[in-house]
Length: 126
Image 1 (cartoon, rainbow, N blue to C red):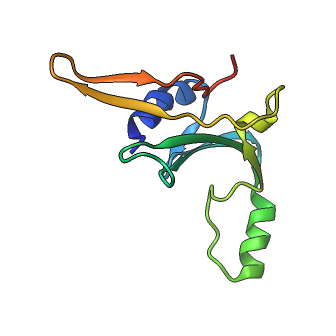
Image 2 (tube, rainbow, N blue to C red):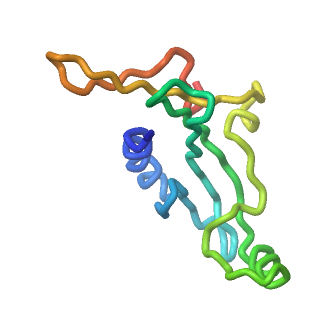
């Protein structure tokens, strides 16, 4: 669910220099050992059947910090998960509010699959 949103956003992030990883996570090399981090969280709980909410999350990952955390916790180091610091995108925008998006995929007999966005959808600042 929500894969069509990920597929729509992926080329834009690639143009901006982000590298795509599994689980809808994208990273951008900011400097040695520091990654910009962007994720598209999906929520289906408390939603209508077939409905998914997309919650864009931004962050920064400091590789040395995450290597230390992995070692101290006895866990295997992961190259891009989790971000060291992160926040839902809406909270770092000027109006500082939650900005989840609920895209709609409807089926019509004549048009096949037609993608439309609900009012108020915001994956990027307006």
